[in-house]
Length: 527
Image 1 (cartoon, rainbow, N blue to C red):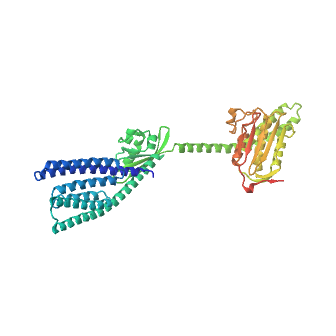
Image 2 (cartoon, rainbow, N blue to C red):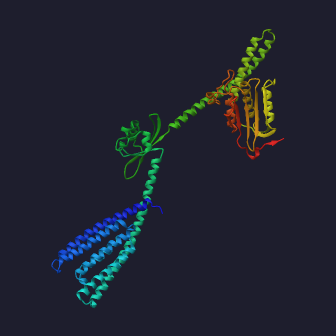
Image 3 (cartoon, rainbow, N blue to C red):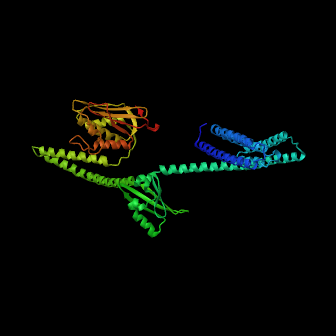
């Protein structure tokens, strides 16, 4: 059985009490022997020899008691041996002082009382029995050696005396039982109190909020580690005025004193941190104040970021509206330029204007795709048809070698979102690959997931660009807007797809999109 802290503490407490009893008993024994030698001086034929004999026996018993006190683990056995030593010493004194007529018989009752104070019922009863036995041995030994006849009066006195021993033992046993129950209740209450104190201390020291206890004059009484960290308090700050440690608290304390407030809240900046102070009056026997400190720096930073995001969202809506309004005039201008170019023999100027209008149109389209809200609308569609349509739209003249590796399957998916991804990835692959190299578009189905990849054979993507690959307005192409991959990433996030760059591919690059496991209702059908 493991030894607990409480059992160790209880054993230490009992052993310490037993040591004090040992010292008190031996001091009393010395005083008793000195008094006995004084009052019996001249009454014995050889008083010095008798006293030395008793002293030698007492000294031997004292040494034996001390050794057993250090060696015996069950404390009750050491206590019982101490009491037995007292019985031996008192029995000798009763024998020497007149046997049945000895005035020292009351000392046996004192030993019973001492045993009752140790809160052990069986020990008290055993002590009463030993007291009676010691008394009988002492008086009968004295009567035999002195040739004194035991009369009826003596017998009645002996019975009365032994009855008193047993009566005292019974009474002290009841007291010891009551004392033992009170000790156990006290020990349980002390144990519960210590556990509660340890729990409160643990809670106080593990709290993220700072706590400072102030007296009625706002002097620091105590604080927890969180407050020490937040306010940069030193261990010697206890007993100092709060306003000397925290200069920003002067206005708060002045407001409380002037308005006689029971609580007060204040937000202050200490260094780079935003702290929320809450000062509350604790009513009780002691007039104290409790000040809690909460670090709200992250909250304020988050509020600032949300405000900035609201501004960016408003700007995004304005840009989306502006791009939508610009697209229609650009189409009209492009048609007008084409009509004007038919009447001119040299149409280089018309070609330049048309290219620039096309570039602006792509920029506007990318901005609209990126800024538009994405809400998936699931349909049961054919993936092969979607890929063929996307490739035909991008490679109208079949000048690129685009290979489609896809089984003829139908799955539940948003076709517009999937086309948005395929158009952007295939268009990027076409611009990155030379005309002689092939582009591989692969779709693979698994049990409840699918994988879609687009691989080109271009120059690849450099390491610095990989970190900002899916951020808006990041591109390596002069004609690119930097919104294509950002839009793809946004669409993947909305549909809970994972997009990544295959690190194993070194000849060009390969984008891989993987779906999450589908539910049974989202299974695919084969033709």
